[in-house]
Image (cartoon, rainbow, N blue to C red; front, side, top):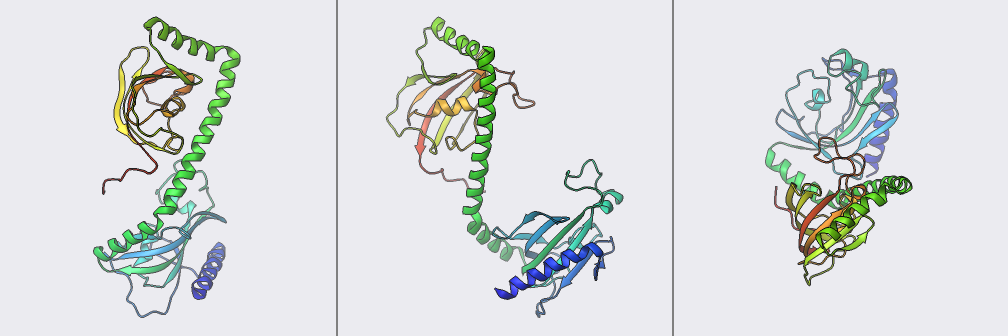
Length: 327
């Protein structure tokens, strides 16, 4: 453990010294690199082998990505074709070796590999992309690589799921805050009351009995189930048919299992599902400000502030996600 720790300190120091190109070699394409040998007796990786690495990727002094605390990366060794990537030195490495590669953003542009306009905004002219990595293992065939990849994936899956859940929760929170601000403005202008009034007039004219479950969201229950109740955090399996309110034409019909108030969904749809039971069948009516609002997704079939309705059937409510089919 200590040896690995000190090794990464050495790699960090090398990455820092790259600013002056001190003791760095160059590949045919001009890629700067430095290899720290482990002193091991294993043979170097050959074309077709898989290398397993822990890595840190930096742009100048800012860390972009790191595998520490996460799943290592796996890369198949290919023929070196002077492509100005770390692939050029993979065939020089063996298990336990460490390396640093330095890619100059100016060189990427000069070689025609990208333009200043197509590069990410954090990759500016004059910057350097530094990739420091340590070869954890070398696999000589696909079967041993696949077995190790699966083991690493299984080990890292809880972290990935937690990270994804946190990201989705943040997206949901940000979207809800943006909707709340938008709704406040609509309420002041009277547009919110207008959209709600249009729905309620429709219900009255058609003699439809509905229950208002949230501002701008109504549920018409057609068949009542007796299963568990859908609530925040529950996994709700749904058969649905999404329709344009004005024309009653379908824009999408499918089945899926969202986690309520975790999976990003339009606000009115979440509000409508909450409180329904397994076995329930009905229709959720959503005013435009609780559907896609002022700015529907680009290329979608929705108009700004368009009211929607979803014919839904709740087939299952569970505390856990359904088993995923093997890919």
